[in-house]
Image 1 (cartoon, rainbow, N blue to C red):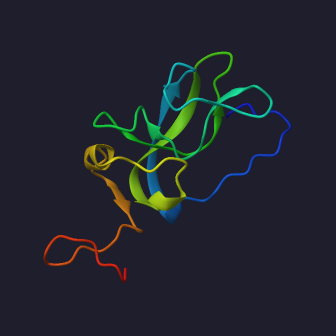
Image 2: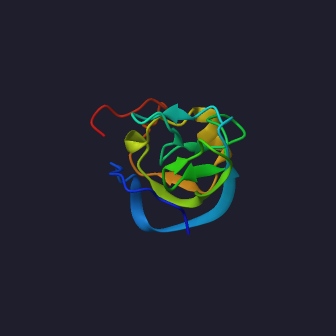
Length: 120
């Protein structure tokens, strides 16, 4: 069970379905996605591509975690349906290719010529 201090966290729902598979990973304050919040704490936001937003991507973090003091466990979604426009940083094409079991419900539909359909 994660340790949470008394504070308000605004977290946007990026799940497109209630069915997903996640596994526990550990993340620390050396991760490139670390941001400093308004209280000076180092956090990894919910919806961060883990471990990096590139071809090494394994999944997307479920919750925001505070990594100021040490490495902490975080749930990483490895299979399911997500909304990429609600993530804090859009996944790169390399990351989306690496995360083979994650489906993106808000990707533009492709037309026969391979271009995005502007009406989608």
